[in-house]
Length: 206
Image (cartoon, rainbow, N blue to C red; front, top):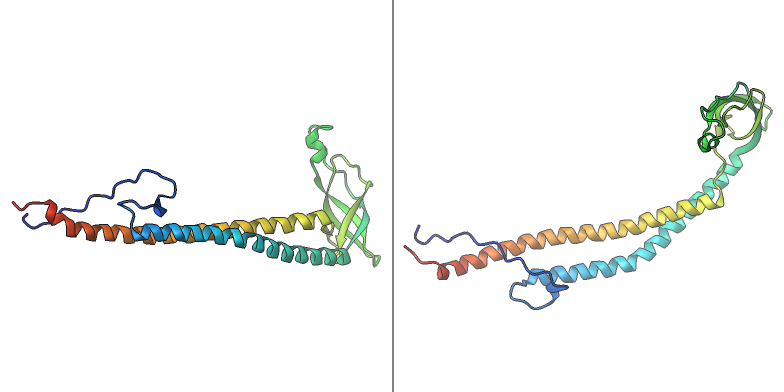
């Protein structure tokens, strides 16, 4: 049809060159340069913020778990419990799996106030009824875990510090991806506009 502008051809695929958005070339648009500077800025910002976020989050987590361990030490006690039944036998006695396996078994223990409690806990295989074990119990009379140890506190704090560092980099990557999509759409729109102005000089009416 006379006067009809053909659709714009897709932009040429640029040969992969390092830092091509920062170098002068015929196909580089203002959006490409802006994207490159934004990406560089986000990298520098992530590198600067990561150690700060890691230290702050790790310090807060360490303080939190230290208080938790102190509270646990105040509300839990280590006591002796007596098995009220035989523990299950492992199908492969003496194996490495048997050494690491524990079976739930009812035990009886006494709290610091002299009250007797019966509760299930995990014990080694094949322990006979009447055997004694050491357990941690809370003020509510329930068997629980031991208070957090210093190594557990450090490991949990380090875990939160690592998560904080990953979140900083994930946020920077998400921001760059969002900006890249916006600029890519703008570049395509600018390409269509430029082609609409150029196409009439490249086509002839029939």
